[in-house]
Length: 424
Image (cartoon, rainbow, N blue to C red; front, side):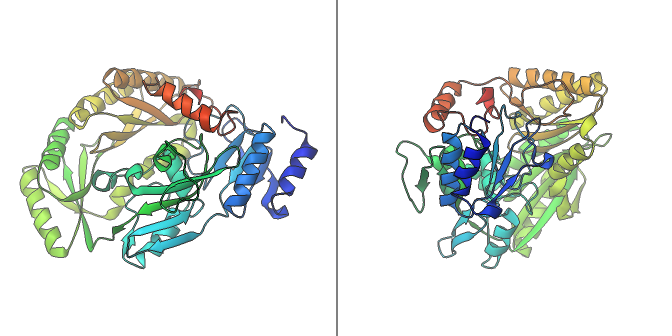
């Protein structure tokens, strides 16, 4: 570390209770980096003070919520201290009449949803591992799921946020302002920034009512081209669907799932319209677990970590068939198996399985094709022993702006160094 152990111990123990500081274990490692200390502040003032102490001591800080997505992004170039939001787990204010909620960053999504449900409301997201994932973590990684089709991404749902900047400032914007940061729409800026600009301590969200009833109808397409035609027809129709995904299961035809949320009469009417629109494609009612298909790919990647890679690719909805055909061709050429879940708004999670050199080659080839078609590929999981492959790919025109904002908010590169695009 850049400072002596005695100095570090003195600084942090002046801020935090003894049980809020512990030595890191191998289980706390972030990819190839082993931190020295785990800090668990009891409130956002303590977190901000600990953040400032670490920054002053030139320590690299890794923010952590539930730890469900620590493998996403590039490995950090340094990791001295893990700053955990575990104890910042309170639901601060639920103004159910205004359909807003203020919640601390360490609260799990499942806990928040259970509380909101008591008033017939929800945060309209369906993300990965809700029982473990925290509010700060989902904002940092911008994970929102299939409901994004109807309700928008997290950037549309978060209306306020407070973050601890590296210098110890608690900066807020949007609802319940503590201190304004002139010139920045802070809550949107930090969403998807992978904790590189500040540590989220609380957020304010706009809410939506819980649906009266739900129903999922699945359509069995003959091939990817037919799945794309049906997807576009549904999107161009007057159907009031909340989510739409296509499951690509190895050695099986594509299966398109449509989620409706309405009264029982509304569900019957919507289902009838969909079946007429889809004919002669076979349709059937499916159980809600089909919407966990994306999570199942992540679970499979973890369970088979030495022989699998997981990537997020983007495409225009009208180019779904071409994008997935390229993935299939590339997988076949590299003797890999492939499964995928594609969302109607142009994002697919792709699971590749096979030998590590083949995985590396396939990811590079798919990325080149996607970037050549105005798309992208982000690597979310790959074997540790596989040759290094940048998680994000070629930076876009926004990189100079991103670097300027990073320099403004985190000039010493304290937070998650190297994790984000182009080593930010």
